[in-house]
Image (cartoon, rainbow, N blue to C red):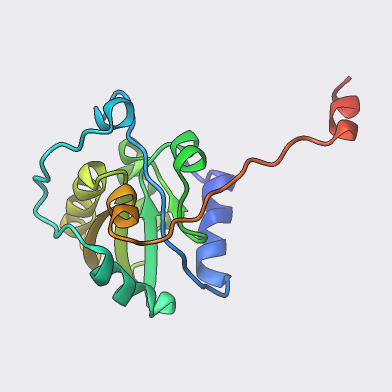
Length: 164
């Protein structure tokens, strides 16, 4: 994932985009979390606070001061939805991606029910980042928050011909 163009592009979008936030997405990773398959959330055990909708909405009101890091797989984000602007780094690649994370912003980590997000938030806090906490996008939605559904772009017919 070193110098990944996708990660770099997402990082640039976070830093440069005019940011208006809706609510987010979340789905569990089968090997990392039971929540993806069962919908059952495990108890939150992280040291970093688990944010509720009101707390996250207060942070979203100042998007220029915020970086959202979604630690879910891309297929989880597309299946469940997410925030319009976020940095996508899966939990298992987070430590190797620290150089891409802005140190001058408050960080909120996201997963389905905040389990993986809590682990990510704790790791980032240990590394000296200013972490507000973790949020579960499905919890946020259950509390009345609106998450953005992201539909994959279908390939154009001309794209198929170029490959032949």
